[in-house]
Image 1 (cartoon, helix red, strand yellow):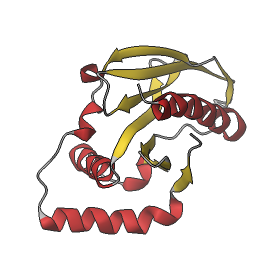
Image 2 (spheres, rainbow, N blue to C red):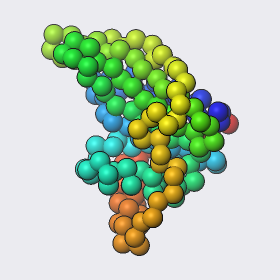
Image 3 (spheres, helix red, strand yellow):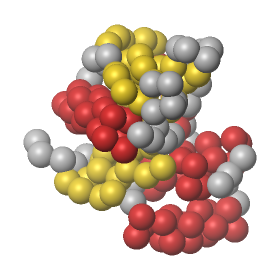
Image 4 (cartoon, rainbow, N blue to C red):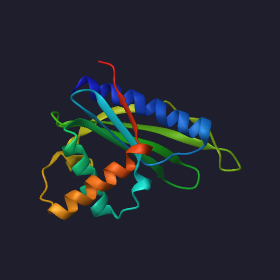
Length: 165
């Protein structure tokens, strides 16, 4: 497992803790890190795409930026009283993914008030439904141009920084 993958798991845990408890929001998040340590993070809901197109776009970004790892996270509602924040970190060169999960507690007004520690486990990468973003894809020139235009448009809203090595 690449060091960036391990660091990404720790950072996304802290990021979600801050978003949930300090701001009361739990967005669908996507982030990637390339071999230079450049990290890009954005909210998936900002894409306003259907599932298949969204997956194609995320795969395009992963490949265009030569990612070595990426993570995707979301809120999972099991029932009215049980909610989890879950994410997985997918490493390009490892057959296992880092899967993290924490239980979210809400008050009577449905505001987040507690979050357990994120439990980290390893799972086969093939068992994660979005683990295939490193796989090459055949996209038309029009689709590539459209995805690049969207990415250029999104850059102002994307968190971009360099991870410490």
